[in-house]
Amino acid sequence: MPELPEVETVRDGLERHVLGRGVTAVDVRRAYSVRRHEAGPLDLVGRLRGRTLTAAARRGKFLWLLLDEPEEGGDALLVHLGMSGQLLVRHEAAVEQAAGHPHLRVRIGLDDGSVLDFVDQRTFGHLSVHELVATPDGAAGGAGSPLAAVPGPVAHIARDLLDPALDRGALVAAVRARRTGIKRALLDQTTVSGVGNIYADEGLWRARLHFDRPTAALTRAEVGRALDGAREVMAEALAQGGTSFDALYVNVNGQSGYFDRSLAVYGQEGRPCPRCGTLVRRDAFMNRSAYTCPSCQPRPRRPRP
DNA sequence: ACCGGTCCCTGTTAGC
DNA sequence: TGCTAACAGGGACCGG
Image: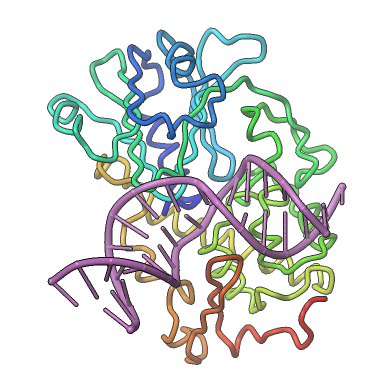
């Protein structure tokens, strides 16, 4: 599934391939894929047609394309890829060849004859148009952090771990102020964004912390290790997968082979921990999974109250 | 205000 | 072989 590194790869690909292009047509094949655009598919089409794509931005797993001739404060096409979403630029013969793709949800025609296709098998992803709002980023950025203009639905999303403006000290404090387990805190988008199940588990393994350790009882150093671990794994994945947009066009979905080789615990139930050889364990967690090394990441003695 | 549980959706795989 | 259930999971939403 697209995690933050894949979303950043897509953003980078959009920046290099569709900026400056004008929107000539929008074909919404499945209304569910634009469900977050409250005024409906026809309104979405009207707000995009004739506009020019002027910038590609991202926060966490949300990405957006800024639109020209802004209204007061500007507006943008907001995209979330969900579990299986892809944004694909198609040229020439590929435009027609892909027109019948079974999972093509929205097709955006561009003024050079190419199209930007939103393909999404499991339909958790969505597109919508929103005006930009200013956010003080109090959740993670703290006082003195730069203001940011983001689409309305992103206003409550904290800065992500790859954001240069992230205030690490304030984030550590915010995590320790929570009354929950460390993995829940890492996955809470209002505290820090962009950390999904994979990077939470890998970051906690690097930090040698069990996912259910209470945040309030962790030291600043321990929280810092968990955040740094997640950030480092994401940065490494980004470095490995950064060319997939150019190379494939058909697949910006993270299937570069990186995960097969590099994941220490995620999806590795029953296989040896790369650090100590103890077999990796899977636990049910938040309607999904949590993977740990039982030796490196011992379970807290007392469960959280 | 904060926290935890539930649900949305579809295709693949495991199990009986 | 054919069916059902489990699973993948970010984020909106809701009740306590």
